[in-house]
Image (cartoon, rainbow, N blue to C red; front, side):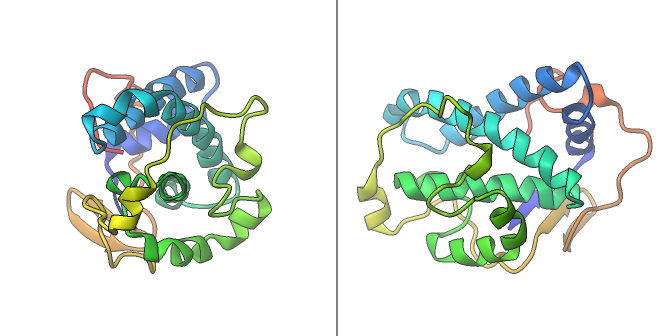
Length: 197
């Protein structure tokens, strides 16, 4: 999968794994991710999906930290959460929100099968053990979108590895080098800027 990585992502990693500010960072990052993905949805569908996405992305913040603790790189941990989201979008028929086409789901799953199996994550149950005890908000499915086979925001051809786009260019497999002087206040949502996930 193709993702970006810059100093703000490293700052987010520090924020999410830090005491006290971790909860603040989670709230801000959840809000940011919900906004980013709702912009891909039809305007008339956004309100009905908001609570579901908020709950879903909140749960994936725990996935991200667990993946880091399991030894995955920052880019891999973040990609894992994006794969979870794409499983959820696929299950809801939200084709326009998907980052890669539906025929790449199994390939993405297989790349992280060890982590996914350890946490009971499947394509049909994208949160697995990270599903909150109280569940997450429901949202209507749009299976007709999936039937159309259009994945207008999906980028195909990057299912074999994590592809990291940095200010210096694109690299395959893992992180760029983590800067040594990252200011945690630069994390998305903790400053005044917005950023892509």
